[in-house]
Image 1: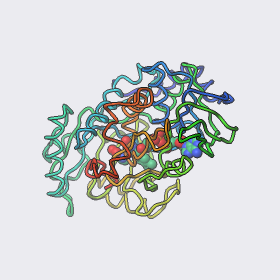
Image 2: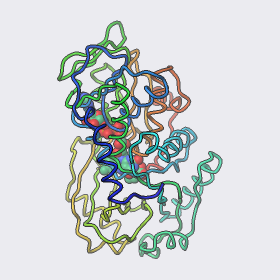
Image 3: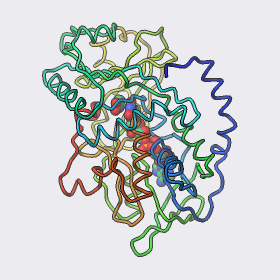
Image 4: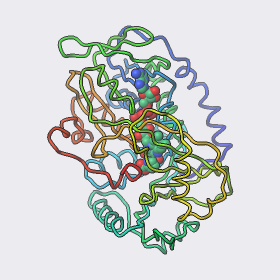
Length: 414
Ligand code: FAD
Ligand code: PYC
């Protein structure tokens, strides 16, 4: 699927409007559900959707303390790729990428998936070796990527200065079927489908406690009262530590702000996504013409869901050398989200010490791309107790030392 015109987007929004109403109206919670999912971000909503679609479990509530997609899902820079190194990562990220290809049709909602191609620049010898290695690993995993030389980089993205003084471009890892999608639409599309299946998407409903009996979850306390459930899915990204605390266990997660910014809109000048991980910067152009720009995660733990001036300077300065064209652009707005980082930069999709309580977190700086695959696997895990997609991502791996090291692929989080 290619890009959509503004008209097509407006028409789609109009058609979809009727379906939104129920989700936005936030029904009053019932007293008891088969499954409660905490967190109406992409991962929580996708989990609920595939519970209904793939496993016929529809007596489900998704509880959200704010609004639909108001967490990281609506704050990210929408890069979708599956060029990771380790086999379990390739499996879940490629499953997600392939589901994105047909997601608009599946949800009957235009998520504007745009497979425009993603390249990760190699600007040091270390990166050249790392990305060549990833390209070989991807070939074995059935993930289509290639290592390209600087001439091809320039062909794919003419605005790049490949001969930069400090970090010349030595090549890139290129994934032609990677790209972007509209982040809000992903949340809205899943929410509407959940709502159509009879699930309750309840906004402004903060979970304040997890209730258990005999080591087994029985429900949650919320700002709208107590609600019972047979199974609980905790899918709250940067707030995972708090929720785990309520459920009586600890997580190897650190919460950090990740910031991004957009420029004033300019004429189309870049139709691929570029990540420059050595200098900590990445950029793409939105359909409106804004340059969408991001850099590294904050260097200290915090829950500050906002942007900061020093970050603009750091990120834009880093990118200037590779993209001299941005040096005189005006920046329009900036923001931040709280990302949930694990030590090995891989997620956790797992049972927990509390029976029937499951957790999906640790996506850190890179979970938008994973939403459909994560939802698929998490739903299978919650419905059947096992999923091939999630089996490597247990909490136990941190105790047992079975890390899934993705610090190179995570890029902005390394
Ligand atoms: P969220 O969308 O944060 O959803 C969790 C929800 O839980 C929130 O809505 C929150 O309000 C709710 N919640 C929390 N506590 C409670 C409670 N007590 N009760 C009820 N609800 C609660 N990933 C990529 O793949 N590509 C990118 O280009 C990319 N860029 C990024 C850029 C930025 C600036 C940021 C911040 C992130 C980026 N990411 C990217 C990462 C990606 O956004 C996240 O990994 C992903 O969105 C996480 O989704 P989620 O559903 O787990 O979390
Ligand atoms: O995971 O591809 C990614 C990403 C890019 C920017 C932030 N995260």
